[in-house]
Length: 457
Image (cartoon, rainbow, N blue to C red; front, side, top):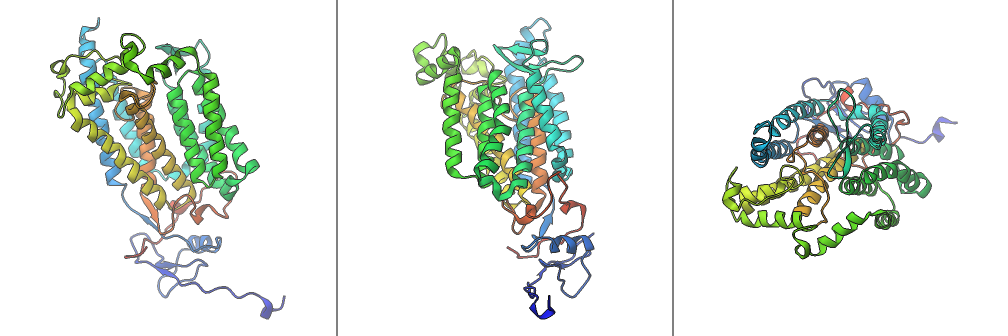
């Protein structure tokens, strides 16, 4: 080709940024052009030349302080309420131990907080390397819990897996985190192909449906619903066709109606009017409402449930722990808990919108949607907005599997929050044109990048 016929590159105005410690480059443009000053690292210039859109300027810093405070406040409140709701039952037990429930919960909280700090410090992009093995392990555990030899049945639900030499775990909790990570990686790889039928909808159903069905079979309708809705939200945010999303929702509702068992249908009937059979099927929801009502504006105080009527509340330290919060801390305490989850949702989606790559945006959105949706379902059950289903309140309810997995998920969300970009989110250019077929790391944390320019957009 004659040199005169060659297309001339379009000049781009370089984006300048002040130098910072450990960063040798002061400015990088879309094609690797540089402004006068120190030369940008070769890795930065090569990456800038590999994409058509201008490279996003990534700012690294500390984790989102608001999210950290919300998580710590919910976890601390959970430990207090777990002790308050379980101490008397432990004292009246054969062991006479008031710390029978709180002791293990303190251990799980300590382990979970350490893992949260580790996850917060590790570059979240490394999760792309383990996304497939992690989701396969989660699927294997969900299959294994269906085997009578290893399953532990509590309240007619076989959700717990007991392997020799290990404590009982709840595979559905790990499955939520594993599937969110894998879907974020898979959708980031697909890019705009997610909107197609054969390239988006069909593989999405093949990936998600087995997890939802296995959890539903446990039976655990609450966790199955939370996982399914979270996956659909991620699918929609990744750019799926809205008609396909509507069809998925309609199909899921119809399938659930067909697969419901008799006692689950009875729960739906009780949900319409729990007071119609308040001593049988409506006993638990009615007791939860009475506990909330007796709490008044400011509640009876921590450990003073007897002063508010001494309501007998089944699963007080677990599924119905929000009713204990309302009974002991009143309307103010209940609104505070709801406000903390609302704050988590707001900040979490802000992190997703500011993420430097598509994987980070979808990962942050999926984790936020999962945790806050599960909180909504748990609270909705207590206030009879949702039919009774056994599901924990993240960070608050007793349970090692739920607490540890929730804290690890929060740590991953905080890892994403440590990096923001001018043009981030789940449609960022960071995942376009890169070979993620085998989960190769994009590497923004493995090389020096300029910080955000003062006053930049």
